[in-house]
Image 1 (cartoon, one colour):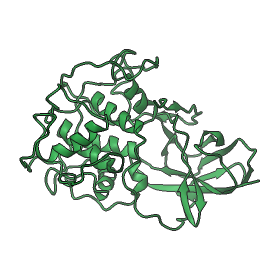
Image 2 (cartoon, helix red, strand yellow):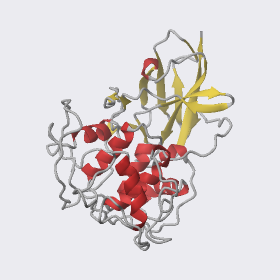
Image 3 (cartoon, rainbow, N blue to C red):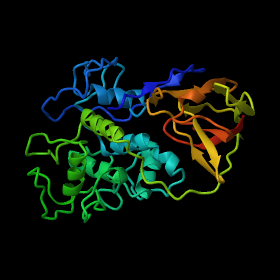
Image 4 (cartoon, rainbow, N blue to C red):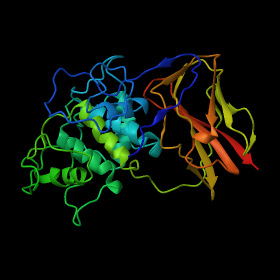
Length: 369
């Protein structure tokens, strides 16, 4: 069994802003309590996620990975319902869909709040989500357990085994389609829900509300969704399907008064870290995440160097005001494989408003023997 990710400790200059992915809801669906996935003691600040809760591992994972935070500093809201828009945004955070599809065509939905337009457009372009109608996503409706199963089955299609004949994966999330096929496991799973629920059940990602009922039309809760995402992470799932690789895309190191640099242009294989510095000489305040992406040029293409699987980043949005500087060390030993000789670059995205991405900067460096 995999270890839950470790959070990297970082020094933040100029403050931090925490963001929430899923809003508060007054009621919750009942579900039988199950034992925790394992018995490691974890520190969480949430009074509704004690150490003996079945949710503790999953909440610890998505909280320390920066996927979602609590509804307050002491309350995660494991039994609260999830809006469709927030489920989509949370999935976008989990898969880094904004990086995979940085300039998606705007989705046709008219009811998507500004904060979620880019993420939902990227998920729509990837073929992962559809609307309740061609022009309405149903942003403020609660997402059901069945809809969540369809969403996750599409997003992690490559990581889940599928029947030989796939009938339902491309059917929209709306409730207008009612074929007669039924699940041989759950009496309430029919039609478009059969294949997604069965795939996730076979993989150990979901279970029923009872032995014979999945609860397909019940609203999913924050705790249930956290468990699903954590179990998908344990399957070593990959993010949403990526577009074909493209030649090297040059990125600027300076834009709108903001610049990114490293302490040296060349490092040896014996060096332990690179120090990244971001300087704001502009007139606006900029926001950016705690994770810096490192890419290596391989055969004319930039390919991301993955961090070790037990490394996660704090749920922090860094804030950099005008005339301020931010510094952060990138430790070479935190990556999955050894940083060897070659051409690299550090990549970070910036915005003037939390939840958006205005532009991306990169600074190249090299590793020499």
